[in-house]
Image (cartoon, rainbow, N blue to C red; front, side):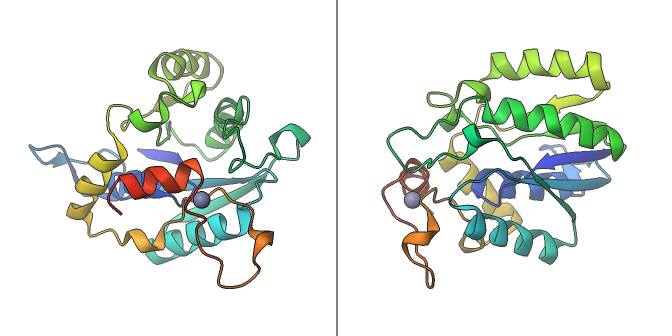
Length: 203
Ligand SMILES: [Zn+2]
């Protein structure tokens, strides 16, 4: 089975990529039905795009995975997520809708998204009920499943489970802060929601 993965180069989607590429799944080590993974990253005017997408590309290059980049040019998506409100309205819903079309073109049978328990409170379009309904809609339109295997896991769970894959978390990027604050040697701000969750996870 060929699948598409929404990939930001952060902790969650990097862990999910390693899970999808593993030869076996589950504690009983059944053969992994996923035989090919295509990663999809969006540029949507996010102020942290350069660092995020550079990290994402380095990870897929290292793993030898096909990586697609799609530009979304909507003014309402260009929001500083490190500001008072990290929620970009409908962001994940839009990502999934566009990913459905791209997955169909690339003959992928499912779209994987790395929504976690940690996202539940803040992001309405990462919650299980939304994902189930969106899955139903995408099956009707594209005959493609939406799979979110991390919805029950916290970021700390994921960091712990990632040890089995030998993931170097230093290669991932989480910070939402705009990068024009400092052009070179840019460091995570330590203040935004993503930085705080990352620190709490033990990375
Ligand atoms: Zn930050």
